[in-house]
Amino acid sequence: MPKEQAKRAKLVIGNWKMHGRLAENAVLMQAVATGATTLQKGVRAAVCVPAPYLAQAQALLGGSVVAWGVQDVSAHTQGAYTGEVAAGMAADFDATFAIVGHSERRAYHGEHSDLVAVKAQRALEAGLTPIVCVGETLEQRENGLTEQVVGTQLEAVLLVLSEAQAAKIVVAYEPVWAIGTGKSATTAQAQQVHAFLRAQLAGKSAAVADVPVLYGGSVKPENAEELFAQQDIDGGLIGGASLKSNDFLAICQAAQNVSV
Ligand code: 13P
Figure 1 (cartoon, rainbow, N blue to C red):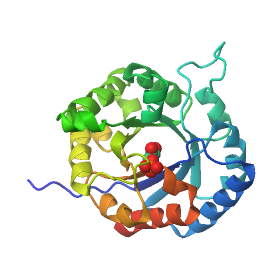
Figure 2: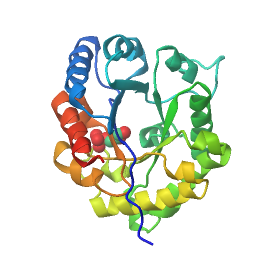
Figure 3: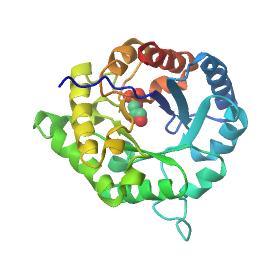
Figure 4: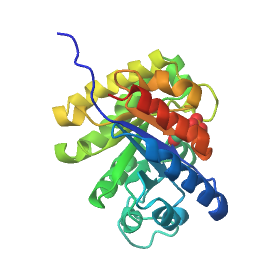
């Protein structure tokens, strides 16, 4: 039987990483909020800002069509964990999303998939949508381990979540070798991994099979539309290009162009 065309809304989320200061954030947030007013229902946009700027996001994006979130949350709800930010704290500022398991956290902070799973749980408990990042290194890809690596990373999260919780997550496939390098995965490479992840999600339930699976890694206005047109690519997690309002809005427009 031919596979039914996916009808999921497109989601474009900026990950500002450790960039920005109050004054430049204000310019960027206002430009994005204004530009995004032309987006139709089929596209949702959000920015994940450094935690100190959540209040600014709430003030400047509140009431706009652009949602906001954080780039990490603690695995704990409260306590003597110096420097950490609890999911509930982000929720206090009306955050919608929390990235968990970004490859930069895995690489520079030693985060493993079991910890990422707990962080996803904490985010869900606080009413946030976790964006669970998975992705292989170049060496792993070259050794034919891509599916094994992303499959293991996702499975750790699916194992600890109930079906109802798992149906509320977002997954982001971000090949490590494509992040910040200007070298995006080809649409075929990305679609292949997305289809694999979709099948794994479908193993949990039909509702879980329908969660958004985003692509991240050197998404730009020039390649966004082709990527987003793929059957199992429901949008993007955008790093560098999310720091320029015109580029971010052009990527949102690309999502609009292919949305159903
Ligand atoms: P770039 O878009 O800068 O490659 O970053 C991708 C990313 O890591 C988003 O989380």
